[in-house]
Length: 229
Image 1: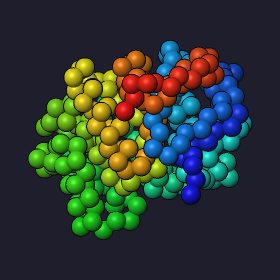
Image 2 (image 1 turned 30 degrees about the horizontal axis):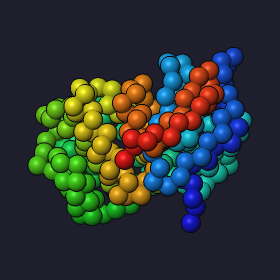
Image 3 (image 1 turned 90 degrees about the vertical axis):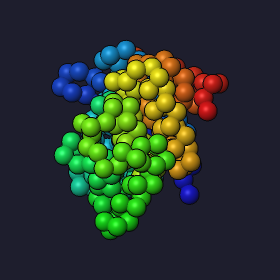
């Protein structure tokens, strides 16, 4: 059993002449919640994409769910993401033509669950997030907060090791943002999943157990947040 679900060592990411991530070391433990904060252009999103295996670092190593991503090709990284990673995006990014239930079930079907199992697990996940009664509706037929709670259900339904959340409350008002963030952290904790959040919102960052402050591609400080759940 591994104690860390994420481990990055001396990660460097360059895009041409631009250095986006400048030698970052980072470990995230199982069930831990970590917020990555910093000004625009500080490297937050590039670091998250690297940790999730969406981009390959220029140099350095990343281990995700115990797997060294360095030797992995695109198909191997994609398979690992499907099985071990959940994503929550700023605008939910649900498939507009599918119902909320089918959006969530799709995450299970992609890792080999039968349709029956996927629908059952999706319904339970939507119920857990308080939107089970809306399962038959499409994303355009529900509110922004309800869409985002469905996105959280989708991120967690297949029991990932880690959930990456990119500005998960950025498109919501304060009340809905607080509700979504609380539900994300509570549901992830119950599932034993780590949460890594990229955010500009200090209130969101305070909900996490640890806050990493980035500037110019480097982690300049780490703060343990006493008010985290």
